[in-house]
Image (cartoon, rainbow over all chains, first blue to last red; front, side, top):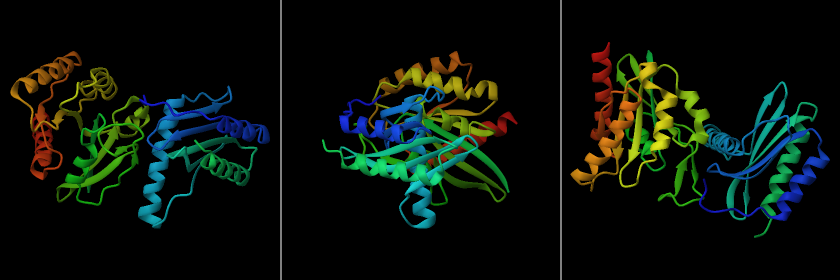
Length: 132
Length: 178
């Protein structure tokens, strides 16, 4: 476990709440550091996602995406999307209180990919602006 | 071309990434992130370090370095098939996390899978004989508990000859077992 506690600011909770209320098809939201420690996660009861495992997966996918983007496309990774028959998962890099982080959002198939992508990117931008 | 897999697993800072870098003939795939906690270095592996080395003209060995923390166990699943060898790295100078080592040995189950296993201790340049003997005894006891016969060696992941010696050991054991 992390040997320091990363504070969960009210603005972060507000943003998670806002996103869930605006998009009822969103089933999971997670914010973790890029080295795989969970800061805050929210999941509906139908999804069983252990916060530490989810954070580890998010950090891995984010790091692999970064490597692929740099080595193949010679650019920075922007969004990673995992599509499935049940819905989509999106991974976006951000920063929170100065720490490099990953936002992960899982949305049911009823929410279009474009909307899910817009919502996730917007959330990452809002989180980046939260002040210590 | 025949392809084989070596899984390199171990605790933070044990030298997995460096070992893949030292051994690999290709530019390795690295998945490191800046550490948000004090681990004695700036970056930590959060995905797979991948490299490749030729064992012969028609055999290549894939080098898969994976984090040892249990929250990354989904990556253990990913590499734990048809292994040519399992290399467990331990860092000297800190009390090893024996619970984690026990978990790794339970998961990879080299005795049941008939996977050749080697334990390598790193960062032991300044280790005294007494300290190494005590550590070896502890590791040996845990290996015996899992019915594993595996050499325990000291290596420097930065040194090509030292790193290559691991492959020679795996090769020798695999040839003897064949």
